[in-house]
Amino acid sequence: MEKKLEEKTKKTAELYFKGCKGERPYSLWRSFDKDLARDFSLFITGQLYSREKISHPIRQLSAIAVLTALERSDELKLHIHAGLNVGCSPEEITEVIFQVATYAGMPVVNSALKAFREVLQDREMWPIQK
Image 1: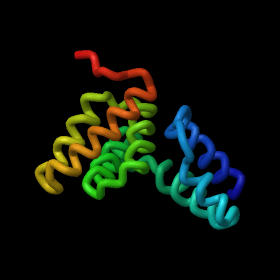
Image 2: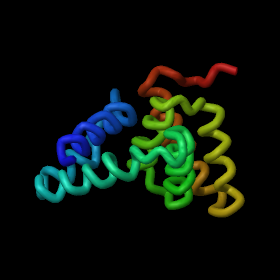
Image 3: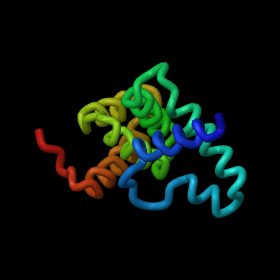
Image 4: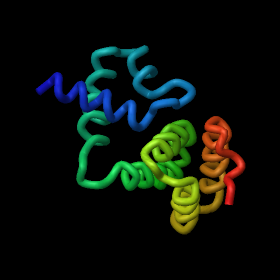
């Protein structure tokens, strides 16, 4: 059972975060407590993110919306990258970010769009072609 969870964690982490630049949360956690980092990773990535109740794109669009509203730019960049990795289009991500304006205001939307532009530039997808 433990081996299966480890494999699922690695598979989901690779799907979401392949090609991400910068420090990933797991590396940060590990630098402070490797055992707790492992437990967090197995739960968050291996059990929560790998659930099949909703699709990976819906899961990432949900994370992007929440992280936009909370104005968590570092984590937002990671999940924008993951969203693109699982098939979310730049237009879908843009729409989700703009939808947050109704509930959280334009300042958080502007911050999110800057983070999104950074990810697109890093992935050589900027400017968005229409």
